[in-house]
Length: 161
Image (cartoon, rainbow, N blue to C red; front, side, top):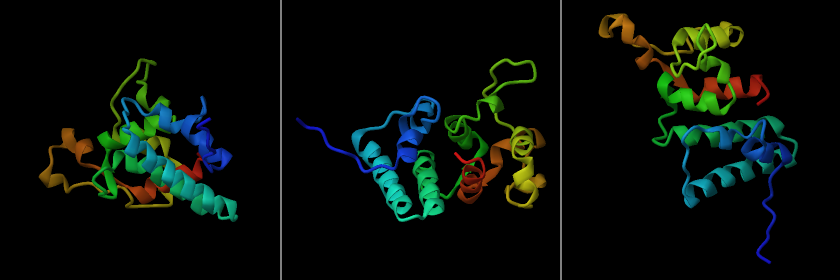
């Protein structure tokens, strides 16, 4: 009686709720209120609209932005490694959160990030912003690393997520 069709491209719908993709359902600890869920769907509808007219690349970029905005609530345009951890987990990069012997490890280090995306980062020197070494304790450097949306967007597109 109260059914309605949400105009989503099948790929966008899969990115939201599919058991194997389902990035929205894979966010650890994510609790959305109704207006937050509407924001996600509105962004996904905009992405689907672009795909309808053949602009697949723009549609995928908007889809990535939809997930990014769930983490970047302050609209900074960048995330720390610790903030990025949840987004990478949602994008199914679970293997980044396992230590050398296969035990779950909740720490995302710069070395793990660089090792996973080595090929992509080779063509983007200087993409990862770090504080000057003199201002930070070397053991605490990972906490101050900045990852921009543009890099995550590129990774999203490169991996075909």
